[in-house]
Structures are given as structure tokens and as C-alpha cells.
Amino acid sequence: MLIGQFRSLNIEHVSPFSLSRQEISRRAVLSVHDELLARMRLWFFSRKPDAGFVLIDFPATLLQAKVFDEWLDSRDEAINAVVLGENPRVDLVDYYCALGLLTKACVPSLL
View (tube, helix red, strand yellow):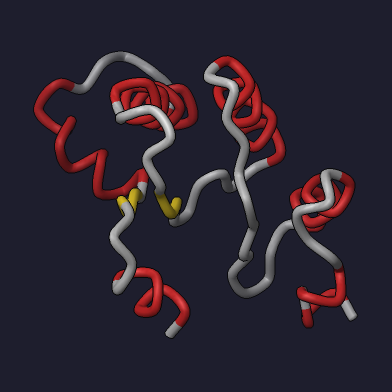
């Protein structure tokens, strides 16, 4: 239901899985992780500066979250909020709580 609410906003909705369909014919010899980061990096740096977006299924790991933060820093941008799905990774919850973008009270599965 929450994703449906985002769709009503005039912002870009991005999922690494939808981007992978666009790249399927140009597969490189990369690991799945490297390929995902490469696709997301291409999207991120080709979008208009300060354009709003909602990411779905990314970042999914602590490494991806840290890499994404580096990308944001390089463009002098920041995210406003983090909404996690069901059964989020504890390391991601801890990371975004430390950044002040999330509280553990927002993650019922950790209470």
C-alpha cells in the first residue's frame, strides 16, 4: 500500500530490477552485485540534479547503502527519509538509525 501512495507523487520510481530488464542484452562479465551497482550508478548520475525519487529494493545491503551515500555526497545531495520493508536487515536499520533517518520504533519486526 505504501508503494501505491508513492506512485501518486510526481517523482521518479526506481527499482534495480526494472533497470536490469533494460540492460539484459548488454550483459557484462560482472558479479550480480557489481552489475547492480553499475546499473544504479548509471541511473543516479544520469538523472537531473535534485530530482525526487523513490528507490525500491535498493540499497539492500550495508555496502550498497554506504556506496549510495558516497554518490549522494558527490552531488551534494541527501535523502530525506528511509522506509524499510518487511524483515529488514538489522545492519541497514542500525546504519540509517545512526544517520537519524530512521528509528527502531518504525521497524516493528525489531521490537
